[in-house]
Every structure is written in structure tokens, then in C-alpha cells.
Length: 252
Ligand code: IPE
Ligand code: IPE
Ligand code: MG
Image (cartoon, rainbow, N blue to C red; front, side, top):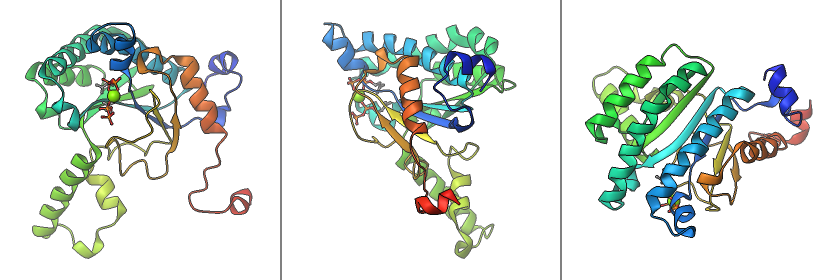
């Protein structure tokens, strides 16, 4: 974390910044409904929360921020909402490119991107290419993503490799699966945040969150701001991550 960020957020312990934070951005529809609006109104306002969270992540030195933007199961929503979400995605990425460049943010995706409308795919590809040299924070958008989908795809790849003799089934280990997942290039999330008060994982990074610290907040996604991210970060920093060991072992 920079000296500037430490001054701004004195409560943060600078040598315990999570490398990777993943967020289940939930509650857009309820936020809109509470105000008598259509659900898509909430999605539009959710973009402000994305911008704010990304800015915070970059400021405090979080290297990877993964945002669950659209799940495999979200394809079952009304077609009108899906279309509006896809349009919002294209618009937002296009509009935000200058800010991504200015703030040195790299854009990446995980998920079944081929399921997205061509226009979205092209916009994503273009933006990934344009930001490929940026290295302050990597923003990973999970789109048409689910943990089970990714695991199944990985298993298929591994089965093919075993069939062709490229790998020995007896030598399959955690690394084999890690490397076959969409998330292969990234460390596992240290912290997982879910907004809107729901306490479930909804098929997000199932394999990767094995040892993530989890923070739930009642705040609805469109209202989520730096102060809430800060709260989650402070909660994270108060946890003892034992990874199966005892406290005494960790102390030595
Ligand atoms: C999260 O908000 C955004 C997406 C899943 C795309 P929701 O749309 O799930 O909003 P709620 O949970 O119905 O309030
Ligand atoms: C999870 O939210 C998916 C995303 C945030 C993209 P949902 O609103 O789809 O999850 P459920 O259906 O309430 O579990
Ligand atoms: Mg929801």
C-alpha cells in the first residue's frame, strides 16, 4: 500500500492486504424495487459501485479483484433483463476504457464468454487487448460463469490429456485441476464479499474459495462504496487464517 493510501486509511494494516478479493455483487433488483423502479435501474446504479470498489482496490494495492457479474444460472432470467444487462456491459466497458488506462487497470474475464452476444465478446476482447500492459490491479469479470461449469470444463480437459497419454491419471493432483481452470493464472481469493444480506455462494468460485475469508454485508450492491469495502477489509485483517493448523503453531 502506498504512503498516500496509508494516510487516507490509517486503520488498514499495510502488510496484510489481501492479494485477491472476489465479490458477489448482489441486490440490484431489490434496490431498484425499493424505490419503485424496474430492476435494470438497479443494475445501472450498480456500475457506480463497481467503479468505486475498483478504485479502492487499486488505491490500497489489491492485485486482483474478481466481480461476479453474470452467472450461468442468470441465463434463466427474463430475456428483457438479460438483454439490458448485456447492453449495459458493452456500454460500461466502452465508457470506462480511458479510466482503466489512466489508473493502470488490466481487464480479464472468466466464464463461458462464447455464450455472450458477439458485440459483448468483441468489446471485451478489445478492452483486454488495450489494457494488457497495465499492471496495478487486474479486474476479472466473471461472465456466464459458474464454479461447477468451470470444474466440468477442467475435468474434460484433463480427461482428454489422460486419454492422449499426455498425463498419467495417477499423477493428477491439486495443481492439475488448478491449471485447468479459468482462474489458473490467479491466486485463490483471500477474501470473498457478498452484498445484500444473502448468505450463500450461488455457484461462484467453488474450488478457489476453499480457504477464503468470507464477509457478508446487508448493503445492497448499488449502495456499496469504499467505506463498506474498507469495513470488509478491516474484518478480514482481524481474522486468524489457520489453514488447518493451531493458533500455537502459527505463533511459532
Ligand atoms: C445482482 O443483483 C446482479 C446480477 C445477478 C446480475 P440482482 O439482479 O440479483 O438483484 P436482486 O438480488 O434480485 O435484488
Ligand atoms: C449471484 O447472484 C450471481 C451474481 C451476482 C452475478 P444471484 O442473485 O443470481 O444469486 P441467487 O439466485 O440469489 O442465489
Ligand atoms: Mg440477486
